[in-house]
Length: 207
Image 1 (tube, rainbow, N blue to C red):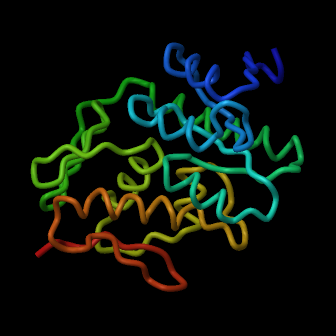
Image 2 (cartoon, rainbow, N blue to C red; image 1 turned 45 degrees about the vertical axis):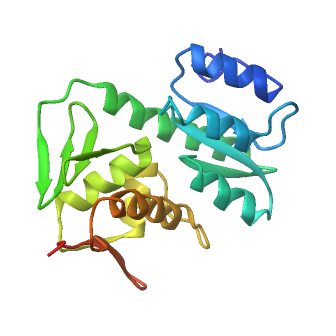
C-alpha cells in the first residue's frame, strides 16, 4: 500500500496489457517507454475494450508524445521527471472522478437536438447512433451540454473534468475536445463544438 492505494507494477508492455485487459483498476499509469509494446501500442489495444482512466508518463519536452497519447485515448499526462506530489495530486483527482462516476446515478438523460447523453448508462447517441467516448470526453460533453449556447472556459473544464488547474501551454483540453468533435462529426452534418479564441468552447445547434 502507498498513500492508501494498492499498486501493481508491471515492467513490460505486453504483460501490462494482458493484466489490464483481464483485471479491474481504478487508474493506470502508463509509461511511453516500455519493452515489447510501447505505451502507445498498449493504449491503442486497451481502448478497444476498456475505458479505464489512463495517465501517460512522457519525456519532458516531448510534445508529440503528449499529443499522440491524448489522441489515442489517454485521459491526462505528466512529463518526466516529475514531482511526486504533483503525480499524487493528479492520481487522486482522477480517482475522485472515478469514484463519483461509480456512484448510483438517476436515469437522467440530457438531450440537445440530435445529441443524447445518458448519465446512468454513460452512453451517448448522435442522430440515434451510439458513439464510444473515453471517460474524459464524456465528462467534457456533459459539461458542455449542461449549458449549451454558452461559453465554457478551458479553466473550468480542466478543474471540473481533470480536477486540476489549467497549466500554461497545456494542450490536453484542446486534444480531448478535438477527439470529441471528430466522434460527434461522424453523425452530425454540422460542427457542434466551436472554439472561442481566448475564452473556451461552446456547444451550438446543428440546424
